[in-house]
Structures are given as C-alpha cells and as structure tokens.
Length: 339
Image (cartoon, rainbow, N blue to C red; front, top):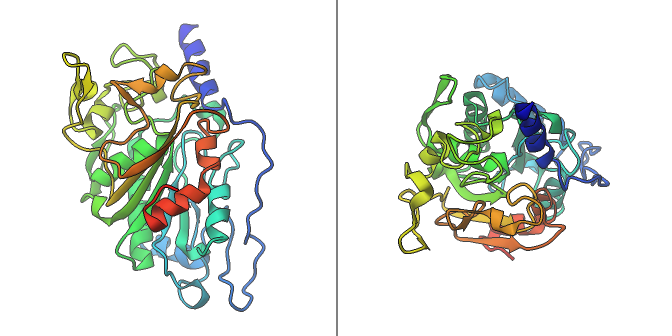
C-alpha cells in the first residue's frame, strides 16, 4: 500500500499546476506551399524531407516534429536549428497533458523569424500524467535524444544546434551530450558515440532537477518509483553523481556552510542558461520554497551557467516556467541574453 501511495504522489506532483489552458494554435499547421512560405507540417509529424533523412540514417524509430518538404528555397536553414526536449510524461506536440509540449514556444519562434525547417522536437518515454512516476533516464530515452540532436545537426548542415529542455528533459540532455556508454540500473546499456557537447551552441534548462528532488529522498533511502530510482531523480543516486562530476553530496562543504562548485561543471554547450522558480510545485513542493534547495543550491540551477531567470510566484510554476518564457528562450538562443 505504501508503494502505491508514493507512486500516486509522485505522479500527482507532475501534474500540479498543469491546469487547463486554451492551447495556442499552430501558426503554420494549415499552411500550404504558397510562394515565399516554407511549408510547415505542424507539431504531429516530421516534414517529409527530414523524415526521409531520418529513415536513411537508421533513425526511423524517432517521432516528433520538425523540418519541411525541403531545406532549400523558402525553407533554407539560416538560423541555428533549435531542438526542444520535453519533460516527464509530456510529448512534443503537447497532446499528452495540459500545458504540455512545445506549441507555445514553437509558435513564438515562428512569429519571430524562424521557419519550420529550423525547429525540431523528439518524443521519448511514456506519455501521459499517469505515467509520470514510471519514466526515468532509460538507455532507450538517452539514445533517442542523442541520436536526434546529431541528426538535426547533420541534416541542417550547421556547425551547431541550440537545445531547449524542460524538466526530465534537462537531465536527459545532460546525460546524452556526454556520449560514451550509458548504462541504466536494469543493466541495459547503449553506446551513444563521442561526446556531442561541442555541437551545442546554447543550452536552456527549464525546471530541471539537476541535483535531484527532495520529494524523492536521498539514495539509497529514497521513495521507490522508477522516477525516484537509481537512474531517476533521487538525491545522490548513481545517475546524478555521474552527470555531476562523480562527486557525492554535490561538493557541499558542511564545515564552512558554503557551496563549492562541482568538480565537473553542469555547463552544456558554449552557452548555458537556466530558468527556475521558487513556485515550482514539483521541484520545491507546494508552499515550501526551501525544498528547492539540494546541497545549498536550487536544484534547477546549472553550475557554470552564463545566466538565468529566477521567478518567485505563479504563473511561473513547473509548467509555467516553460509556457510563460518563450520570448526569453528565443533571446537566450539567438542573442545569448536573458531579457
């Protein structure tokens, strides 16, 4: 009975704050091949040209959105492509949960100089709020994210891509860019390839649990669900210790009561930014902002970051951090500024 209650509690935490909204329309989903307009297939499928590329490179298992009927002419890729990575229980299109997906950010980017051929997202994990306690950093999920970032970069012909991630997507990206052999607690492993940190220009981590979740507890005395497990988000679990530089207890000095940066920075790419909130009902627990801290830092803070945004009240909750900051996200990847 205790395990069932914990599982339901974690699952419920992932949907708190995800109240019903009027979903923004997809600005180009009904567009045709009219002169001067790059055709946009919408948020439920890849463009035919990009899909053909994925098929030809052994990535036909990937789903999401991005691309168009070509990458030339009106669809010529000028901006660095942006890769969106969703969070726990979510999906690229936002159909899995209220306030989900990347429709809001995508529409804003489309309205401010980007084309369908420059905006991409990939699906991973189990979608739906009821599956929130079941998702974790599986080998299959990390592989999908790694392969997708590489595919977008190679397809675009650009030297680098920008990556914007939310929630579980933040820690998943951080694991993926390290490359090498990734092994989860079940014993399943996958060889990703060389590190791809060098092909990321800007990384934006939104509402990430970079130091774990207080609601999960600390490894190995954590609350047991896959999301809170050894390759989930329990504090000091093997997964987080590995991506945070192999330092147990996150390099916090108990003797001086001061924070010491990790031996290996959490920085991803050339420019790294975080978006976090003390009203994050998942990262902090409701009305308990001190629960945002894990070893003297807000869990969403990224060591070595070039900048970030911090909010203290709603609507900037766990999902609101993503939904309310599309303009800031664009400035971060385009201009390397926060406001």
